[in-house]
Length: 397
Image (cartoon, rainbow, N blue to C red; front, side):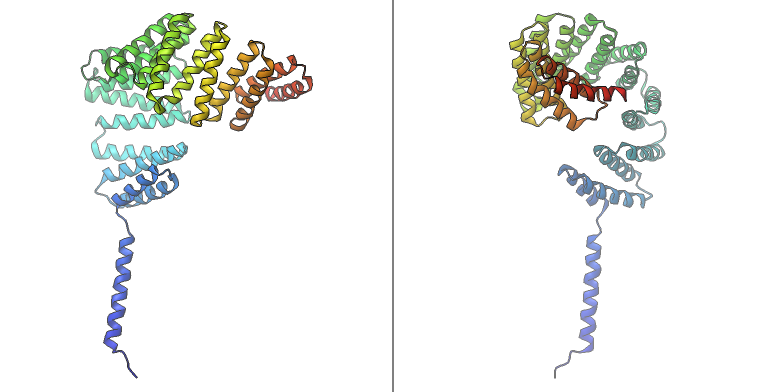
């Protein structure tokens, strides 16, 4: 009977152990590999897998005391992933810690910190922590003024950020002062970003719009459009949006012919852009339809409301956006004395609103009120009473 030699058995056992050891080593990924795999998972839309990989990469980065850049990158990446999932509260401590690491690494006076302050401020603002957001934007402004000088374009960016918060809080005078200073800095700079300059004009236009100064509003929207067209041409997406903003202001100021021309020019650009412009295309169609409705040009208004609905249905727009377009079309039919046609349109709008919003949302009450009044006018009193009962219940809560 043949017997294996003891030495050969030992050799095989040792070889298997070595193979298992090597296999275990091969499974341990580096920080670079984990980060790359996480980014690929993000591109594939698998945010849960990306989160797992980003967390593994963060664990590796935390174990390395000599590479703060990797630690900052991991904290930022994981925070970004959580933000994409709508988990903003969980992202906040990661971003706060990233700033601490960055300050220790670069020094508390490094202007790069200002960008991190701004990013963190945006998240705080998104969760309605406006006081903290304001504090961070002010820190960014102070840091940039100290490190870069009072007339640097990045100082203008910080002024614009603070102005947006002031506008959000209804502090119109403060917002106006900050935006005018930002615009003055950027107009005097040879390296200022035209997008930021146009944004500041747009924000200042909104300040005057909130005050009801429609002439000044239109003037500033026109200036924003001029800046964009000068740098990007007439047919960019940003130019089409700016032209739509101007058209809105002209319409509200009852400058109907000028508004119509601006809307149609915006639509022409958006049609040429194709897919990138479809979201704005629906918005402009709705607003142009409103212009025609104000002038009782119901046939033209119907054409553009239906075009907005067609665009939204084709691109799979969110149901509240589509519901708004349907509500607008129903209201048009009602005003034109076409109640039977308004009925199913209101019904579909309400169905979509109900699917996406809770009863506390004003769009629900608005649609219930209009639909009930329509049904009442059509003699369908029992159905109208049901809607009014629901409306009364909403308003009593």
